[in-house]
Image (cartoon, rainbow, N blue to C red; front, side, top):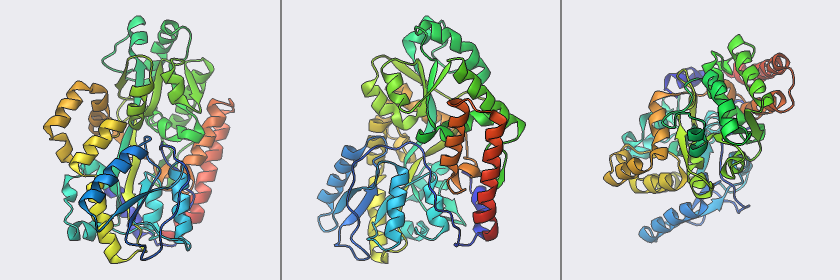
Length: 435
C-alpha cells in the first residue's frame, strides 16, 4: 500500500472499536504459553502462528540467535492456528495478560493494533537498534505506514498466484509459459483443461473460511469492481456484481471448485489448477505428485494483491525490551534469514539485499516458480481494499458472503447488497466517528 493510503487515516483517533480480525493464509500450530508480563524474565518472547508451516524453520533461526546472544535469549511461542487466533491472544494479553516482545501481525491485524495504540511505531527503534530500514523492499515496508510512521516490518509476505499441472496443460495444448491473460480467457481454457484432466475442475480455490475474500479480490478488480473505494463500499457496483456472477457461473459449470483444503485437492491431482498464496509454494513442491508451474493471476492489471504478514512490537513493554525486540526482529528478517525463509516456504524475500545475493539469484534462476511472485509484485498487484483490511471483520464477512454465492448458489445481487449494507453499518459505527 502506498503511503497516501495512510495519510487520510492519520486524522483518526485511537478510540476505534475495530477489534474483529481477518487475515490471509497462515500455517497451523498447536496451542502455547503466553508472555511473562511487563518485565518478563529477560527472554525475548516471539509469538507466531508459523506462516507456511514454518515452525521448525523459525526455531532454527531462533537457535542461531541464541547462540550468538547468550545473554538475550529468544523463545518461540505458539500464538494460535492462524492470524485470527494470534490476534485474539494478543488482545487478551492487552487486557491484562503478559505481553510478548514481538508478534506476527497479518495484512489486516497490524492496522487495528496500530490504530488503537497497541503496537509501537518502529521508526525511532530502527535508528536506535541500527536497523537499515531502507533495505526492506519499498512496497512491502510501506504496507505498514500509518500517520507518517511504520508499525510493522515485512516478514512472511506474499501475493496470490495460480498453480497449474504442467502435464495437463500441455495435453490440453495450452501455454505453460503464462497463465490466462483474463478471466474470460480462463473460461475459454477451462473446458480444455477439464477434458485433459479427466473431467476434474480446471481450478480450485479455498473457501470463505480460508480467505476466499483475499483470493477473489484480484478477480473483482479485473471486472472493474472492488470491495470499496476507500471508505465507500462498492459491492453493488456493476463490476463487482459481474465478478461475483462470473465466479458463481464458473463454479456451477464445474470449471472452478471451492474447497476447504484446496491445497490438498490440487496436490493429489483432483484439480488441474489452484489459486493460492505464494506462501504455499514450499509445501506444494514437497507434496504435489506432479510437475506444476506458477503464473500471474489474470488481468487486466492489477489482478492480484499483496498479503501475508509482518512483525510488530507491543507498545506496552519497556523501552529496553522494545530495543532488544527490534534487534531480534532485524536478525529474524536479515538477508541470510529471509533468503532461507523464502526458499523453504515460498514467501517473498523481504530485503533488497537478498535479491542482490549471488546464491539467491542462482536459486531463483533454477526455480522459476519462486520468481513469479517477485515479478508479479511490481507488475500485477495493487493495495487491498479498505473494506477488507481496515473495516472490522471485513475479510470474514466478505468470505462468508462469497460462500453464499459460490457454494450455496444464492442470488448474487442480494448477497452483494447484504455486504454493502453490513459494511456501511460497521463504517458508520466504528470509523466515521473517529475521522
